[in-house]
Image (cartoon, rainbow, N blue to C red; front, side):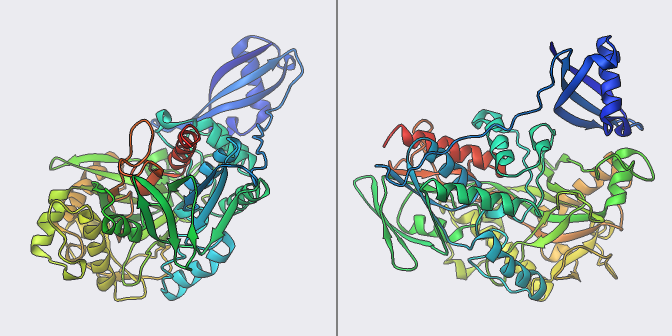
Length: 531
């Protein structure tokens, strides 16, 4: 007989299978010897009281042979001679998962990626961190696997209505992720492990007859009669297919500019912008676990914070326990920071984006006081690039404030709240270094003031959170795309071009690895119904 039960255990109890088995028998009312094995199907931590608890749901095998969890293997046929071909622009999670889905549907995917493969990217990331040199085609955002490859590998999403979360997690598990991604409440792969998984997915696509071109950048689109006829790449190639998936990510500004230039409909999309804040991990552990020292059986603590300040949302974004702040600029003379964690989350710092909602009216107001002629003054309310230009303007300002070479302007947290320059800064994981700056000189006034209010509210919610041991680093600006590429709700095709399928984060339809992967799968399926 098999039975599913839920247990509430202390962290040290949840770490020992023999103790779990004892609790299983006690809960069901049988002898421990009657339990032949169990599989964990869900696991989460409840740290609301002084005693932290681990909640686990287990599938129990009672007086019958134990069968361990079988890895669900998705098969991928050979499509090298398929009649239908789809070009996918971008090899992030949306592009890769769209390719896998197309293969299962008998369609050949052809991926073109402006950046390099995961191995070659590492050299460019090293220059980015150590020398402050940005390669506009190969960085934390551009290259195989997209922004997520070297930016943490979080697999948590609330977007259950958009697709099959379990299938996405199973595919990651099939290609090398740890089994715990299948049952953790907030699954996480880790930047150190994700590149090999991405490499395995790429190899499967190639083995099945798919094609992947690296360092191949889309620069033009030729279309007629509501259909793309071909695309042109920077190396002079003209490529044709039955359909085209645009999965370029939220930082591909040149793609937004190309679409605007070709009069292909795009729209300004509200996003969020702010800073990345870093605490010593022990400060967050103490606040969340209500103790001076974290139990060795508990993971480094995380947090999720949100508050309405002056009628505007202020919230944490991409929280990285045991993590590192990284330079995420995609062009020279711009300063962008992001965060990531290794699989063990064992670095001494905890960082998180802390951002404020930004609207079209905010950008219009900002540019009235801060004109940017380099953007051709396209700052009227009808410009679809308005919020992208606002984002870009703040990044340029942060670069100047840091003094160059990706040194980031920063301020201690309490000093930030008091609008006071910091005499010195705490140690920080950000390798290019920090420059003490009063961030009210970098951030727009409404962002600075709302962050001040947000930090004060969060300090009341989390004991010890508002502290000068924490450092505020500018600027966290790539939370989501500042542009939306519209698509039909049913066919998922662009309203002007019926064989162009905008996809995932860059088009404004996803926010993270899993939701992007699901959107890629969804678009691939719709294409299979139409070509």
